[in-house]
Image (cartoon, rainbow, N blue to C red; front, side, top):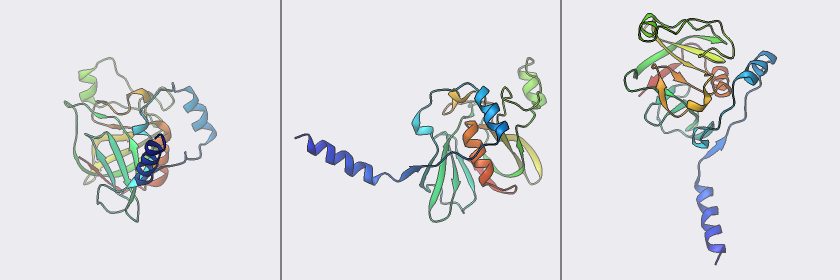
Length: 192
């Protein structure tokens, strides 16, 4: 009788259409800085996987599904890489279409005036492991105007899968390095 549940599980697994994506190569600085960011348990649902593309957007497009807390990088041949993300909470959520205007490694953080007004204790800081932007940042613009929103790493990986940011899209540092390596400046980003 045990063979039936085992066969049923095997059949279900063959129908799964996702596979893990290897970690990107890291520079010595990346490895050193990432070792200083606290490790956190996270739900495997938010791990980096190659999946069948659910977005139906052209290859090279980034689609952020805020309700799912997932970011998809559309690949050719009906595939996508899915990354778990944190998104803006309801008060600060942003949706729309933008382009990656620039990319930066271990960027400095300069919180906008609106954020400083809400939270006077925040202040800008140079890039590094304690910086809220993490290992990489992709800066989003709309028709050449900075949206003030970013796709970036985080020094709080335990919050992946939650609505906690001030509108930016946060990723685990290893995931944002992977995305950064795969997308060019000018790529389209759709946040829904």
